[in-house]
Structures are given as structure tokens and as C-alpha cells.
Length: 289
Image (cartoon, rainbow, N blue to C red; front, side, top):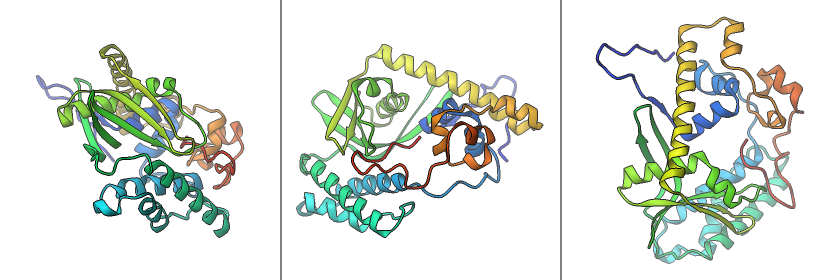
């Protein structure tokens, strides 16, 4: 169990150390946050999701493509990486897995055809970090491009949801990555892009100092809430107090929760999903809930 020690006299309080995913998990559902980050041993998760297997396979292939020798950075080379690293967990059967492997291969080959293999990114799956008086946050960026206007945060999307400019502007994680890129790589960074591989859509937004400040204030507010809940959990809570500090936030996404079997309210709010239910043969799978 993590211990939470009070600050010594004259010493500043400890920063809340987190990733953007940890913050958004707290925002989405405090009970899921407790299950995933605090309870030890953690409650067993449900079976793997097929749409996650597909998404991870695509991300891994795009990361590995930039490590290939220059003469192998081709569309075919990218497709070969998808096949070589294909994850089969969660699919209904071998036929469904093979069908989605071929779809993913085509998706990645089409995307890579528009990339310049000589235009080396500043970072691929690069961990960036920043800190304030309240939090220390780090996260891994899919790709960091260097262009005439500065560094650009690129995030790959493989689900059926097609992102818009509003999504790029409103993403807390992307805004925090911008701040992390600035601190880690010591370069100008304002632009964030969501690259949706199934449709070829690129949703972009150029942050201002004001928009970044609003996201940072939100992150610090969430961090303060989560830090207080962490301390309460470490101090020990009876069942009623625990549910008050870490209430479930129920809705349609409860059916996709890894911890649904441990949450009666979530099971009542939405039907359980099968591991392959996130796959839509026409439009592609959803993003992770």
C-alpha cells in the first residue's frame, strides 16, 4: 500500500504524480479509479477487448516503422509490421481476428503512404513530462513532429468515432502533452492533431496560452480531488465512506468497463459487452472507454 506522509514543517506538500489517463479516469468514474490505481490487490479485470488488441497492434506497427532502415520504410513494410505483431486477444474466433488483421494492415499501409520516410519525427512513443506547484504529470506521445511552426503533438486514433476540431481542442491529455513537450524538448509547441486512420481524417487545433491555461487549471483541480481521495483511501475507509469518496458514475460506458463484474451499479446501468462487441464490420471499433 502506498503511504501518504504529511509535509514536514517548512516543506512544500508532495506533488500529485500522475498521467493524463489517471486524471481522466478519476473524472470519468472514481470507483473505477479506485479499482485501477488504489486497491491492492487490484480486482481482476474482465477479458481482453478485441478493439484494444487491434488498436495496440496498429500503434506498435507505426512506432516500429520509424525504426526500420530507410529502404524498408514503405507501405508494404508497415503492413508487414502489423501482421508480425498482431495481437489476437478478444476476438470471437480466428476468422474474425484474421479479417481485422487484414483491415488493419490496409489502414496502416494507406496512412503510411502519405508519410515522408525521410522526415524523422522528434519523438516516437516519447515520454514527456511537466510539473506545477500542484502536480507532476508525464505521458507518452504517439509522435512528435517538427514543422515550420514548431513541434506538433500527433495522436493516432483507430476507432469508429471520427474526431473533430472540437475533440482536439477539448482534449485534456493533448493539452498536457503540449506542456510536457515544451518542458522536455525545450521547443515551441501549440498544435495538436488527432490522426484517424480508418477515415484518413486529421482533426487539429492550435492552442493559445489561454486555452492551455484553462486545461492546466482543470488538471490541477482534478489532481487536488484525486490526491485527497488517495489520502483517504490510504488512511482506511469503511464501506459506506469508501463508496462516498469513490462513487460510481454510471452510464452507457459501464458495459465496456474492465471492472464491471465488481460494480453492481454499473451492471444495472448497461448490459455487459462481449470482448468483440466493439468491432463494427463497417465502421471500426470504438475508442477505449
